[in-house]
Amino acid sequence: MTHGLFVSIFCSISTFVLGIYVFRKSDLEHRKVRLYFLVLSFSLSIWILGSGLRNFLPAGLLKSAPNWILLSTVLVPITLHELVCLLIKENYKPSGIRQILELIFLGFLFHSGLNSNLIAVSESSISVYKPLPAYHVLISYSILYVGRSIYLLIQRTMKSKGMIRLQSFVLMLGVASALSVAILFVYILPMAGVYKGYFAAFGVLSWVYCWSVAILHYDAFEIREQILDGKKLPFLNRISSPPVLTLFRILDPNEYSMKLLVSKANVVLNVASKNHELAMNTNLETFERAEMVAGIYQNRIK
Image: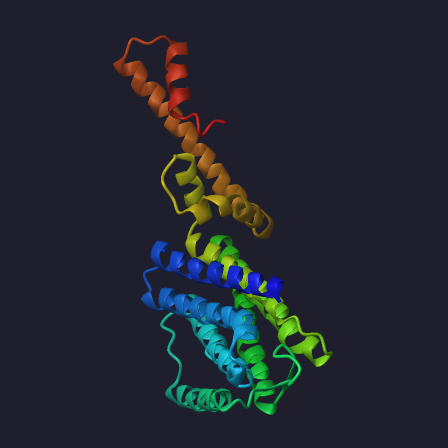
């Protein structure tokens, strides 16, 4: 119980903090993207925390509370799908009919949760439960919407190049890991009598981390240049830059090589220009100029 509570609290706080961090630090112009990501992070954080604290609830709430906690996940699949569409489609706007149908469907799930018709909690333990028909509907809807989000991201990864391919792959990796881990621990294993649902929190945390990196890394090489120049950047950008660049090299080696060559050419050009400027405006000897230029560009020529 203590182990599960620690995992839930840690992952819940981490998820919420990353959501706020990205909302404040990202340079995305589209307010909906930032807002949707914050809503997703908050919803999943509530679900994770609620799952960890349900063992400490009053006896009168033991049957209802787990159903209410699940309500925080109802909007997650559709919000994720909308967020993916906003990221990869220009001028995205869902049809009115689809929105009405989705509203009715979500109303059914909320009604089921409020009336404790998603899961039947065991008398022996609050961690043991029997999925009811509405719960199977919730899982199927989650797989459908999240699965389509993964499909759209895979399509974009295969069709695009460079930074867009990298971002799409990282986004897809985050969603796929979260879905796989969540389905395993909240659906497949419980059907077999194994109740370790709190481990699903690690899948959620991996998703939030991957998406945070993808959103903040608007241009991996530009961020690399800023780091080399000693400019102040968000902490997450700094620690994730090396693995992101490595992934860039694997996913699109040609684009990576070209950008790296351009980066090195700019360094050579800057060094040559600075040396020429010093030669024209000072009386320094050749080696003295070289030392001064090396000091100026020491981060670049390590």
